[in-house]
Length: 124
Length: 105
Image 1 (cartoon, each protein chain N blue to C red):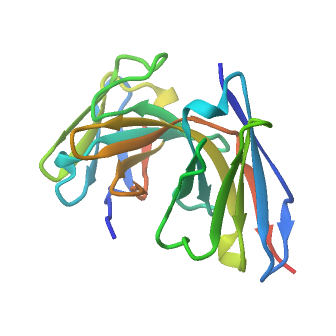
Image 2 (cartoon, rainbow over the protein chains, first blue to last red):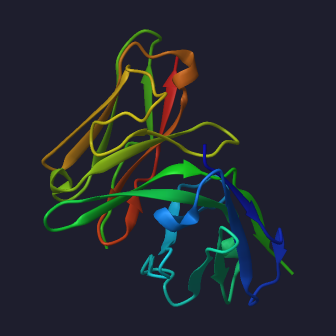
């Protein structure tokens, strides 16, 4: 079955850019939507955004100005960049596969497969 | 912005039924799903599209959604069900509830 694995630096300095990659194995990346979600220490989940194989993206309005999510179908990977980070961006970052259901008016998304998560600390 | 509200904690005795609520404006007009997260682990989807169970999720997990409230029900709760549960809905972007810690006493 499909598996996801996050990778990237565990420590990022304030004001710099956080960069993470999610590698998808056991299935093609070209069929689904793919999301990033984060969880600050001891807190709840926050959705960051998704990317589709076409390059279509959608972001959480609260992070939209600082986030870029991209996809590389040749490598079966998708990536997250979050710029101008502060200590508030310290969190476990998860990548996930999205499922989608469309009614006559709206499409709905949910995450059905998650990576194990990677901890990113923002500190000088 | 769209908000989902969950009670911070719910307690249940083993073998009894646990109900966890999730409230949001006209939530019943959207689809809700539920995730289970145990300490140090990634979230696991237990209910999607209001009341559907993914493969491998026990039948004791069920869901409903009407009006402004979605509910996750765990029948015959077991010790292994102790976890934090998050509801989720889509409102042009994914929104999570704050999470409910289920304690099996």
